[in-house]
Length: 589
Image 1 (cartoon, rainbow, N blue to C red):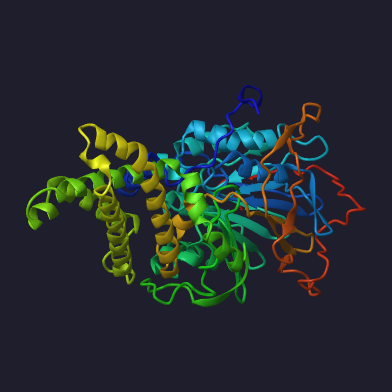
Image 2 (image 1 turned 180 degrees about the horizontal axis):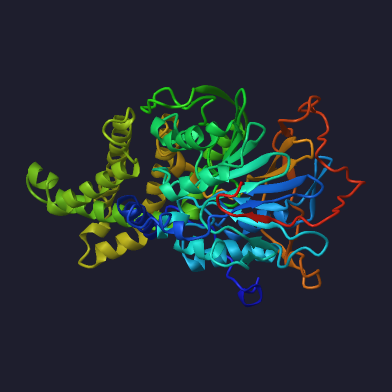
């Protein structure tokens, strides 16, 4: 894959434990948290067009795709982009046509938002998947919602890519939105409302005004798919306040119209999970390319909004049950054991850093052992510095929450235990070192031998100790994200393909890919709209669960019955007229 021919440089998966990346991402996250309100461009978007949009579909029907968390390593990102770009997918005996709308649900780039990152990790792979608009049907439209990684530069690069130009496009998909949030009217009284929360903090006034105008067109017969940047309904199980902004939006903007919010969908957590309640589906689908996240730690039931919320006027709390997840809980637990091999392989820089710290600590301990007196040995300056560095680093790595959080002490205790274990490993290394002849050699013999022989071995042992720590503390709901982020598992990806029938039935197909493609073959003789690269071995998408039918007619398909929304393979998919999106002026009735 020559970058000169592709027009972009395919990227390796992000090594999330790389020392410089940890420092850079941590600093940017801190700056965004401290100064995000001053860099918030949502207020400035009030000067942009406040149009909402209309997608009429074909003969009153519409297919739409949803993908999130996509801009990571090339192989995973392009595997999903390739599937999304194909005219149709044959899955489990069903033929599912390509979506006339592509919804990107957040975190379109990793690890940080900037022009080159979007070009190489998002725009390039999707342009290679569908370089030109399809010749046999309408041009699909792309709408994108920013996630926290899109926010790290204050949305500058995001708005340039997705909302700056009237003729904007990413390969064969055209972009239409003018802001980082949008409302789209769909056929059969369905709507998409996509809200932009700045790190889950609040929804700004210009955004609320925009949606108030769009909501004037809603009525009791309308149904809504609400897109959010993060599945706050899941996160609220630990932090009840994180769902407040979504609940406020539903309660003040949507509920007064009488319209029904039937689906909440989000990415951010890199797996598939669906919770179902009496009148609403809560779907997490963050499998567009980023590392896999655990599913075995998901709560079996949720109460949304949480009864613990401090909001006095919160909506009525409803109970939801976890009915599907991908990968399965058993597979997720099995994958967690891969931490011992994948962490050092995916993060060699992190292993090298641990080796350097351990080597310096061992030298400090062996040097202190040669001093007279117990106190002098324990409180030698180099030893104190390295001990504080190790213990402080392990405590910060455990990410203690605020002091008023119920899990505050758990993080501190486990972080300290990890630090003491690393110090014990260094002490064991010093004990062995003092029994070898190298420590008596003349300078600079000991440090050279330590760096060449001791360093690589202790780096492997220290990384193994860290892996053991991650595996154990994940059972206590600590560092679960790091357990999987450190492994960087690229397989087990997912996206949604949804269908709105003329009778108003919404059918959600959750599509999983157990194994991504890592070998590609160029297709220079393909049609202008066909993918530049095709998989050397076929990708095998499958349904994660039976199609989910929402608000269908009186007679609905049971979960195990054939999906009426899917086209039989022998019939094909006839497109009778173009699906030309329309723009609805702000405030129009």
